[in-house]
Length: 306
Image (tube, rainbow, N blue to C red; front, side):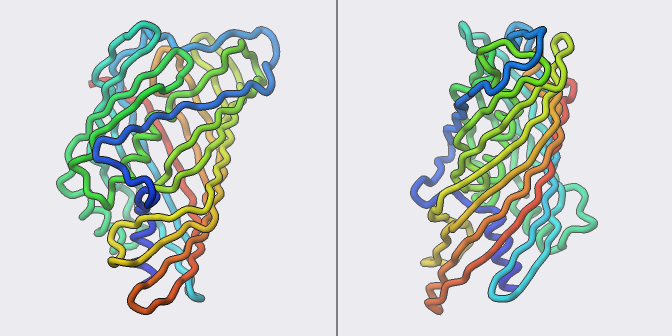
C-alpha cells in the first residue's frame, strides 16, 4: 500500500523545488532549430498561413502505464486515459505574429476498465470541481511560440503540473519550422527546455519530411529527452519529506499531419520514460531509492470549431 500511495504522489510531480510555479504561469517555449538535411527537390519554405488560421478545437487523449520498484517491491499500474478538449476561441493578428486565446476544458477520465480503482478515485477527486482554464500564446509563421501564459489559480495543486504539461502539449502541437526551404526527406532538429510533470528537462525533436502536398506536410518526429539531477516537490508528501531526481531519460516518436492553414495538427505518438528517484522519510530518517518506467501514448485530433 505504501508503494502504491507513493506512486500516486510521484505520478503528479510538482515543479522542481527551486522553481515553484505561480498560479498564472509563464510557459514560453522557444526552440533552437537546426537544419540537418534540406531534402530532395523541389523544395519549399514551409510557413504557417497566419491570415487563414481561425478558431478551432483539438482533443488530446493520453494513455499511460507505469512500473515501479522500491525496496524489493515491484508494481505495475495501468493509468486511465485522460481526455482533454482545447478550443482556440480568439485569433488576433499583431504584425508578423498571431495571438491565440484558448480554453482548456476540465479533463475527463475514460477507459477505466483496466485501471486501478484507487488511482481512478484519486484522479477523479483531484479533477472534481475544476472549471475551464483560459490561456494565451503568441506564434509566428514558423511555429515559434514567443510568449504563453495560462491561469491555473483554480486548479487543485495535485493536478496543476499535469495540466501545465497539457498546455505544453498544446504549444508543441505547433511544429517549429526551419528558415530554409525543404523537400521530401528533409530533416531538422528543434531543441527546447520544457517541464514534464514538474521535471525540468531538455527535449530534442527531430522532424523528417515524408511528403509535401499543397498546404499539408506529413512528418515523422523522433523525440529524445534528458534531465539533470534535481530536487522535486511532490504534492501530498509529509512535511519534511524530500524527493530527488537522480536520473531521467526519454525517447519516442510520432506521425504528424501538418496543415499550414491551421494552428492544430493531427498526430499520434508515444514516449517511454525511465527515471530514478530518492525519497527521504523524516519520521524514520530512512531514504528509499525508487525506479520508475512510464509509457505514454498521445493522440491529438483536430475537431471542427463549435
